[in-house]
Length: 113
Length: 112
Image 1 (cartoon, rainbow over the protein chains, first blue to last red):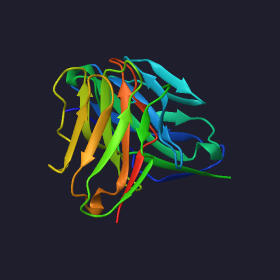
Image 2 (cartoon, rainbow over the protein chains, first blue to last red):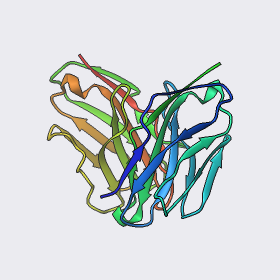
Image 3 (cartoon, rainbow over the protein chains, first blue to last red):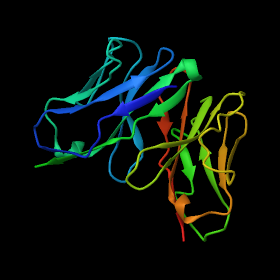
Image 4 (tube, rainbow over the protein chains, first blue to last red):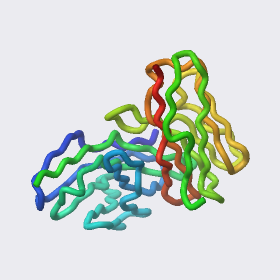
């Protein structure tokens, strides 16, 4: 069945460091891929998405490229800020399974000044 | 409304009582999802409604949990005979086909 595997946390970085959070997926059809972010005490918000192979999603300085050959959707940011401290969830939606959403376990990021 | 609305935002209940959690999805969204998030944990899938199709109930942890949805509108998640391990944030999300899911702020359930 469909699933998402993402890098275990927690991750602690200094401000302005480079961030990578790995995400790989298994899907039976042609999934859309998403990164969601959950700031402390808040609900989940969509950060970025990609709907087909080789698409790059980007938002707020974050980027992720849909790599079908490696079934990956790694999240990157060149220079993190303290305000990026949050939990990040990788997710997929697969029409082959009726548009059901599958989420990774989440990666907690703390950025220190 | 503009977003997914959940009520109540907080609920404290005594062990053994029944609770009902409500979700108002974004108007027109055919899909509705319920997830559970325990403190410091990821999202645990509970149930998925898509249009008029039979719901996917494969994530419901026990027969104490049930959910209904009226057409493409409001959904209610009911937990009977609550236990302390039911304490969590219950998240609802809705979506159109082919698009991202939009989440509500959640209902924080505390069973004492």
